[in-house]
Length: 344
Image 1 (cartoon, one colour):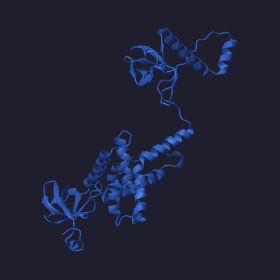
Image 2 (cartoon, one colour):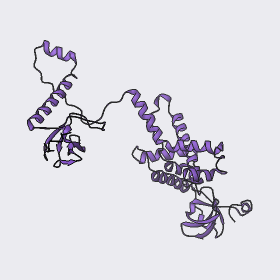
Image 3 (cartoon, one colour):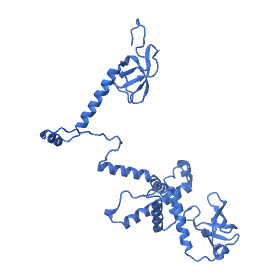
Image 4 (tube, helix red, strand yellow):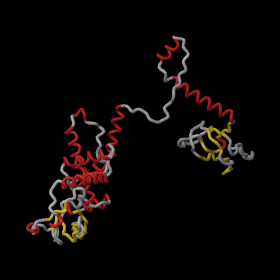
């Protein structure tokens, strides 16, 4: 602080180069000796000359002028030169001693330039590689962990001290309903099937730690309802079509639909739509749509290649109309209708 009988006169001006000489309190990323530039003319605030400066790392701070030192261009250039010399000394330390001795013994003058790696990429130790892989797996399989936890919460009824049903518990605690919970739980079995088949088809020594597995529940959803081998075939094919990378949910769905159409195209076509009758009961076959798969519905309208079907939502007890392809519905025999209570 300046003495009370001396007027406060700023020593710096806009554009001056400065150096921080004192840090009175712990401020993140600010240390003594840092260089900077004055951005605005100093101002006197509460008896202290304060300066707005931009530091060498891009930070903009307000600092007391008494803790700054104005430096000349000559001093600045000398400091930069000294720092470069220190970097060069560190680079020379990277040259093996044996190389230096050979150079001295042969009396050869060799110019060695060590170019620092500016890409920011560094090698990891084997332990760090394992940690990286483990943490990546945790991120990728977050939905899987959620499904495992939901199974424990549901099967052990750990919600019973606050809620009477698992559905109401999920809605209040996690803000999602029964269908989302069921999808996460169903995804567990699909991922387990994929891992089991991959490890069964390859010897232990050939199993790659970089096995591509689903990273989202939506990628697994089209595979639910398929046989384990079909799940593996669809997932492998989706990876291939995605260029060897993790496929999107849309890509997996497209592959499952293509496989379904290929299977059905191999069977004789006996004018399937002629077997469908208005208000007839049908069983829905959509493995990629778990909410509809193996449900029953009533036909509303029949078109040339599609059919409109009324399907009951059992949770809300409301009817919803779905448009499906002829190949996605199978007429239910009349004698079986009396045994079904889901659709009336």
